[in-house]
Amino acid sequence: MDKCPEQRSWQNGFTLVEMVVVICLVSILLVFVIPVFRDLGPDRHNTGKTASLVSLIRSLKHRSVLEKKDYFLTIDTRTDRVWVNRNEDDALIFDSDVRIQGVEIQAAGDHQGRDEITLAFYARGHSDRARIHLLEGEREVTLKIEPFLTQIDITDQYASFDDCRQ
Image (cartoon, rainbow, N blue to C red; front, side, top):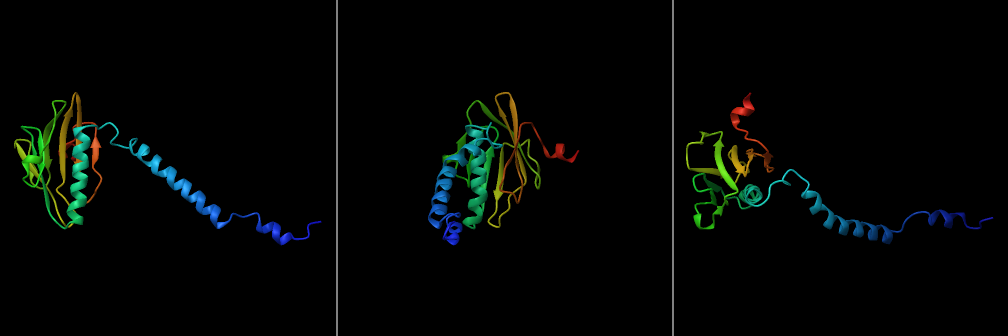
């Protein structure tokens, strides 16, 4: 017969130290696992300049709010260059594998005929609603920028505003 039944029930649980150790180990594992799962997301097929452009747009959306400053992204479809706030010296230049087919901004109408298009990212947290059409080799890609969303939707086809209305 057991003389101390209370002591036995006390030993069935975990101590605080054991719980903290397990949480620390799981946290360390997550630090290494989360970047791997990020690579399986919607951007997984976009490498090089397209991924850089998506990253730049996301950064401008966040920076404009954090710094309470308007940012302007200029896209030159003739020379396949992209720059921020009239600073052409630091332009993101697309190589021959990626071409900018065109840019549409909904508020200002269709800009397919113009060479330089400027997208605005405002300090109040919104941006122009736009579509950036790229050609990566033989693959058409459209970057969909929504005014109040930080996520950039990437579509593996040419998707204009007219396509969305049908």
